[in-house]
Amino acid sequence: MEEKWAELEKRYEELGERVAHPEVAGNVQELRRLSRLRARLERPVFLYRQWKRLRQDIEEAQLLLKEESDEELAQELALLQEKRAEVEGELTLALLPRDENDEKDVILEIRAGAGGNEAALFAGDLLRMYARYTESQGWKVEMISATAAELGGYKEVIVSVQGRGAYSHFKHESGVHRVQRVPQTEVSGRIHTSTATVAVFPEAEEVEVEISPADLQIETFRASGPGGQHMQKNETAVRITHRPSGLVVVSQSQRSQGQNKAQAMRILRARLLEQARLQAREEIDARRRQMVGSGERGEKIRTYNFLQDRVTDHRLRRNWHGIANIMEGEISPIVDALRQQERELLLRQVADESGA
Image 1 (tube, rainbow, N blue to C red):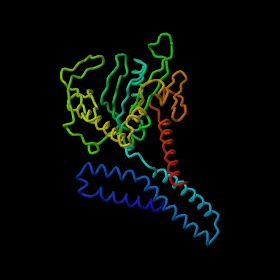
Image 2: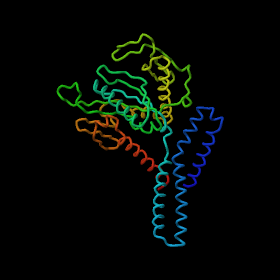
Image 3: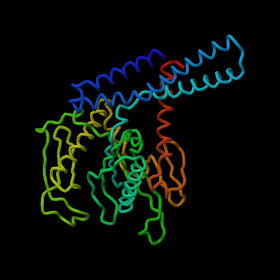
C-alpha cells in the first residue's frame, strides 16, 4: 500500500508542476481540469505525509526504548501507534473509488407527482428545503426554469447548485419523495398523501459533451407567469430540441433571449452527459425509472410525515424527527448518513476484491 501512496504523492507533485506551466496557465479549460485532478489528491497526499512523519517518530521512539526503558516514552509510543492506525483508516477512506462527478455543480429538477395541487405545493417545499441547505453549505443556488402551479408551488422547477462537492451531497436525493399531511385547503382534516420526483444531474462542461449546432432546433416564444398571466411582449423564452436524442429543454426564467438560451444549453449538456453515462452501462431506461420512477405513491425513497413529526429514509431504514427544521434545510444528518452508507458499500467491495 505504501508504494501506491508514494505514487499518488508523485502524481500530485507532477500535477502541481503542470498547473504552474505557462502553456497550461493560458488554457482555462485545461487549467481547470488539472486543478480538479490535483484537488482530488490533496487530502490523501496530506494524510500520507502525516503517516510518514508518524512512522518516523515511532521508529525513533522504538530505538530509544531499546537503549533505555522509559515509561513516559512508552506511553508516547502507544499514542503514536494509535494515531498512525487512525491515519491509515482515514487514508483508506480517502483512496476509495470515487465518482468522477462528485466535485461538480448540480442540476436539480423537481416535479410534482401524484396528488394534484398538494403535490405542487410539496415540490415548492422541497425546493425551499434544498435552497436553505445549499445556503448552509456556503454554496449558490440559481433558478434556471420554473412552471408555477395556480394554487402555489411548482409543477416543475429546475435550479443549479454551484459549490465544490455539490454532486456528492445531492446525488442521493434522486427519486420519489412522499409527503403525508393535512393540506391547508382540506376542511375535513383528512390526511393526504402526495409525491414529488427529484432528479439530480452533475453539471457538464462544454468540453465533456460535444453538441453540433446542426443537431439543434431552437425556438423562441413569449414567457408567461402562472396560469398564462403576465405574458411578455418579447419572445425571450427559448425551447431547444436536440434532434439525435429527442431531448427538449425550455428556459424562460431569464430576462433576455440570450440568457435563456445559455441556461437551456446548460440543462441540455447535463442531461446528455447523464444519458451518455447511462447508455455506457446499457441500462438507461432502468436507471431513469430508478432515479425518478413514475411519481406514483408506492415508489418512494423518503417519506415526510407531518402528523408524526417524522422523516423516514427508506433506503437507510431510519427515522429523523423535527420535520419543521428539516423542511427548513437541516438535512445534513440525512445526507451524511447516505454518504456514509455509500462509503461502507465501497469498503465492502474493496475488501471483497482484496480477499479480506
